[in-house]
Length: 405
Image (cartoon, rainbow, N blue to C red; front, side, top):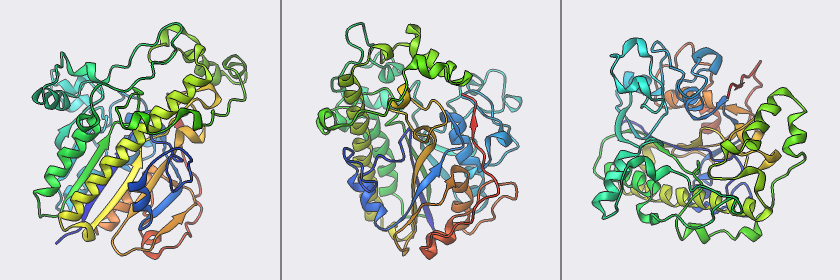
């Protein structure tokens, strides 16, 4: 049987939010267990933010200044290859569960094609088994209707709860039970296919969480006590930050302008609010980890565990209030440093602290599948380090990241 690949991405997951990284609040027993038989790359970096460009960089193996899809909605030139196209060359059908946030090249589309009007299309080459974009998760909405929920429109499922004066963040459990959450639904779709197939596979599973909106159901909502959470490091007020650099002035506008206040009223957040928000973020991480554990169980039951490369990563990080910033704003580690865990059968557990980049994923996967790495790939294969259990990556002559948010 040919080798298989299980490639999991969780959106906006910080590099440090794991038990194996000694985070005192986060509960990630399944990923921690994976690390004990894998290679953990602890200085791994995205090439750009936000979501679409970050995923384009990861899935093409190209730096942003090459592929130029540098913001959500900037089309990806059709001439560029990607991981889906490359694995098809060596006989795989790359299944997608979730999304890739890709903007297609409009020069090759019918003018009325809906892909002209969204940045949330699946990347060309993928076999879309379950499309779950953030703006309109139709598949999840239909599933919820079948299970007795009243859904007026799919877009309502990811609408954040509007903060208001005197209540800068609404801290309460999400009303869709965890067994029916988008995370559980997506994992369930992948598990059904894993359980019913005996063939080798390439599956890319892309979870939205812990990306905002900041809400999670029980038991994860109450899993982490906000009082046990440390406040983020804040050395400057937004006003002080805004005078240090023109870009920081633009950052600060987002958080000082009341027109941008939706899920949070940034200028009114109290210490209690910030701890509550972080507890929900950590709860979302715990929910994703729980469902990843179910996927691992299904993989084991399928009989293909000993033939499968397992990857866990993210597209970018989350500031979580550091420097008074939220989301993936700016060039700090909290925005750009991301997790990367790779397991191949029979390897020794290893921790590699040398810098790696999201462009390294495509060549590593193709190398593992015995394919030919595209000549124009900007990344490098990490496979020999994984196989040998050695941390001896040579320094690069240069690395590239872009801030075009």
